[in-house]
Image (cartoon, rainbow, N blue to C red):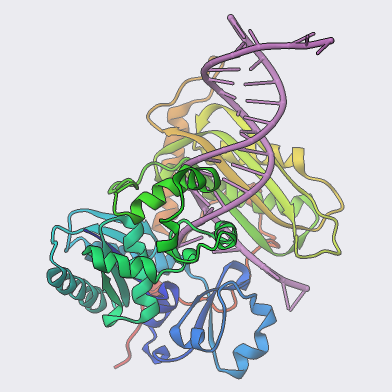
Length: 420
DNA sequence: TCTGGGGTCCTAGGACCC
DNA sequence: TCTGGGGTCCTAGGACCC
């Protein structure tokens, strides 16, 4: 059987962890730039706040209801996530981290009672060891486990646990799951299925295979098999290597000058190179893209991207930054209000597989050595202590983060201090 | 003033090859 | 009148996920 363990309102729960006075209070976490709502406590949900709602449109509402507002603190959430994943390993050697707040577990137990007990145990353990509430769905396939989890949350069943191990329980699940609550059905597929009068997961199983194949592609066929209890989604204990690494961010304010955008891009390019080194990869291709704010209909719009091949695979900050700036030279145009710039590292190879270029005069060992020292210093002291001159100091592009909580678990200077 | 960021997979269509 | 067929590679775009 497969269990899906999902942290409830994860970011909101993380903010509460070190601030118990927020228990029982409405609380929201905002996206980068304090843009829109990406996590809500149950109390905030009860007040009708929707996911993705822009913060600036609800300022008055937030104040009126004394809703606590947090900027997103991914350093904190990442660190709490690690604790949750560690704690889950107690219950199974096979744990697949699916996202920052979810994991699949393979369980070698089959009876419904035993599964119920085990789920309760897991839930209590994460609660007492990490302090984060979770919901658990158990079923024969990942897709059904996702559904069981959602069902548990929605119906508030038995402490957020739902076990669908027997055919009759699976049937209950299928009949009570709306199609848009199925893992793999988004708004577009939902529209098409509703037109066919397919409203639940059970309805979906009545559709002929060729129709599924044509309209929902092979991914849809796989999903339907999973609903039938046939395992069709691979198990991945070890995360497969990433195919691309992307750093893209909206600016705190609109930018028009190339110099300002250059500064932002150089910083993102350096972050991208750091990520490449962390996962021991090198990129053969760099993509740069730039875009205006599509929400501002009064502005002229512009979106463009360009690929810059690297003659030799690299994860050297200065090489990645240089390629990124070369790309910006090609796609930048005067006279637009730009909102966002980004860089993507593509065609990744392991850093042990470096192919030397025929006319390659670059000293790879020297570069690797320099980057190692660079990373060590930045890890040891304040993050980003040493930087490249082109990364600049104007910081006009900087994110808005008006309500950022401390990095309680990752920065010794921000550890919670208890008075006596 | 103000609307996230980072991924994956699939398909269709064009270019190119023999 | 009537203009092949099959393969590969690349890209853009669309759908999905959290």
